[in-house]
Image (cartoon, rainbow, N blue to C red; front, top):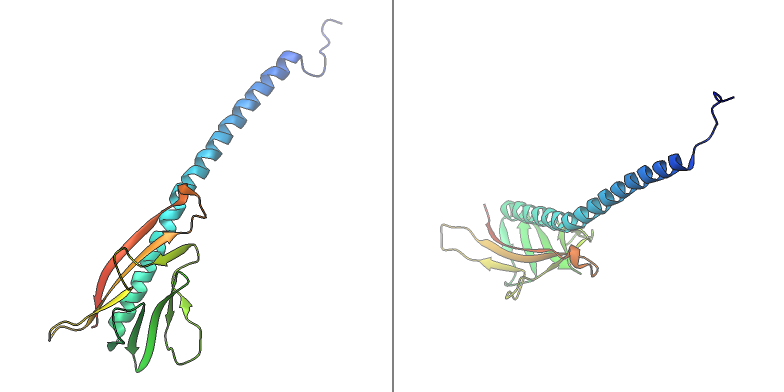
Length: 170
């Protein structure tokens, strides 16, 4: 009967299994905490940079396609004549919007996402300033935005970027 093996595990084997399992779980939890922390640090800058890039690209594209910059400046809206239509960029509740034709009754398209908020740059009275260059140079518009991530009070997600640039008609 000495050769019969008992089924089940001893207390020592259980302690070893629990110790190994606990170690694996602790490593996985540490890895998860690191991943979440890294994501929290990178999501805000990535979102802001993506919105800055898209907004600047869209405004630049439309200004270069315009025939004229119309309206009184400095202003919080940018009105352009494009193919005999008045197009408008404006900031509504912290979001940049673009309306391809302000007379058609169709709502403006949002250029920036709700994850960010657009504000005036420090020391600026308006978002858009018209630059009248001497001939033969064309008119230009200078714009400045401060785009901030909506962190909802989480200091780890506080991030903003200021963009100042000028674009001329073609």
